[in-house]
Image 1 (cartoon, rainbow, N blue to C red):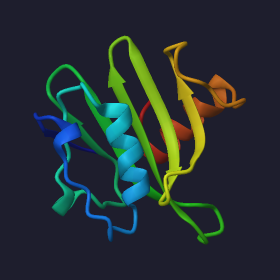
Image 2: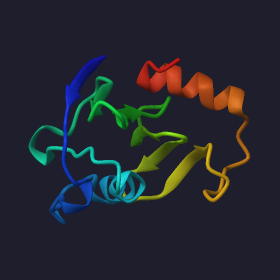
Image 3: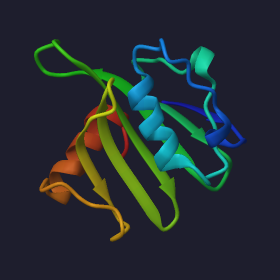
Image 4: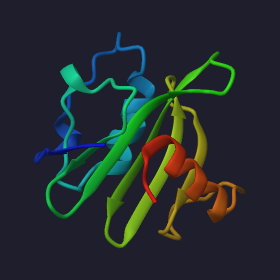
Amino acid sequence: MKSTVSIGKIEDVDIPTDLPYAGALKQLVKDATGTGVTVNIDSFYTNEPIELHNFVDTITYRFVNDGDGDEEFLAYCVCSRPVEIYREVTFDGTICVSNATDIEVSNTAISTEKISVRMKKFLSIG
């Protein structure tokens, strides 16, 4: 996994409306606002796990094809201690899988064990 220092305000990222995965990126920005970690739109798309950090908070993400190869989605984990949010989001911004350690954030009915397996498979975490 590639790890890069990326310090800045993710909420200031300008997301082009014609970007195919704009909805997924908007959800990531929403979840990562306030972390002090940002993304570079020009080099954001990747099929390999990427870790962006500011030495305290971390965003790990990767674009993934579903098992059939029909649909691509963004899998990501935002870790801003003590909160950790894992999501799988379609390009239009629909959240398919979601889990968080913060009780304020709604969880899907997927088990913690299944989330751990998905994080290891898609993001090489764990």
